Structure formats: structure tokens, C-alpha cells
Length: 219
Image (cartoon, rainbow, N blue to C red; front, side, top):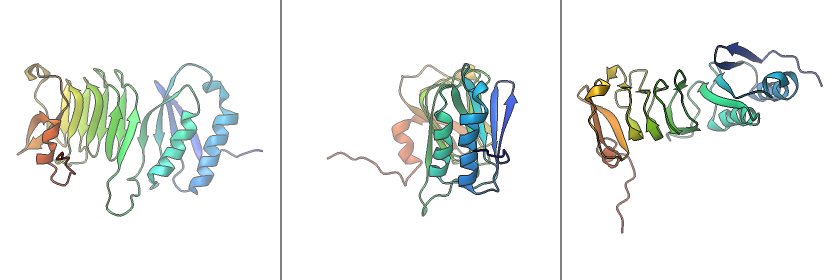
């Protein structure tokens, strides 16, 4: 079987690979080409050390299931570590919101960009950065940079199990300098904007900001 390469381009950059996926062809056709290309055409880049991968899906609107289908193919290659996914807002049923989940470790010089809300399972080390158009929730230590609401959403929040960032930014508001962060108890906290000023609070108090959250009241 021969598949003409026209919907998937793989570009080498200084610290990894960029997968450029055609946003105009049928999704299944692009998916099939991606699978074939990895299985038959690029074995030389799939047998070495860990390679960081950025995925760019153009202006294609995709569901979470379609996005996962792309990620599953790449995850099937043991040495590819997905660093970022760029796509149009995912299609969501009804008015429900969607929280995208990723795991890993962001090291110095690495940037994870996401459109929407993100739950990141892992640490963001000094020099690493996460940027999102929506909220950022980190189950791990935030010691690098986090920028939520990058398109101007001042209602976005940034939460982390260990809040020790070099910089926090929500929309265009930047946090206090790092040397002004006092030592706090080890508990999950979140950052938010109040009258244009960055504030930090315990995560259980997020309900004061998000009145639509379901709250456990016990029995």
C-alpha cells in the first residue's frame, strides 16, 4: 500500500518535531495518513531518544474524541512525548464545558500552549511555561510561568498543588515579583483577579468566584 504524503507534514525544530495536520481534508483521511506515515515512513525518528512533539491542527474544529484519536496514534510511538496541541475550540455538546487533561513534566525552555481549559498532571519546572485561553489547573508543583486567559479572559483562574511560580499572568495582569511571595502552608491554591489585582486563595474558596460549581455539603 502506498499513501501519497499530502495531509501530514513533519517539521524538525531545534528541540523536537512539529506535526502539521491538514485542516481541509476529511478527518479520517488525515488520520489514516498520520498512522501510515509513523508506521512506515519515519522509523528513523521513532527509534531513538525521547522527542518532544507539538501538534498543529490548523483551523479544523475537532471533538475531544477526534483529538484523542490523533494523540493515541502518537502515543503509540514510545519515544514521542506530546508537548502541545493547537486546534480550534473543540466541538462540545450542548452548553457543557470541557476540561482537557495532559500529563508530563514541563522543563526549562518548554512551553505548553492550549486553547480552552487545561488540567495538567505533573510539575512545571523553573523556565517552563503553560499558556491557556481558559483556566489552568496543575496537579503538581508550579515553579515556572502560568498564563491563563491569554485572549483577554480576566475571569480565568490558575490553580496548583504547590504554588511557587516565577510568574503568574491572567489576561494582561501579571503577578507580583517572585521575591514578594511569602512562605505559605502546603495546600492547593488558586490565583484570580479581583478588581484588576492578582489574588491567591485556598482552592476550596473557588466556589466564591465560581457560583455555578457543584458543592459537596456532606450528610
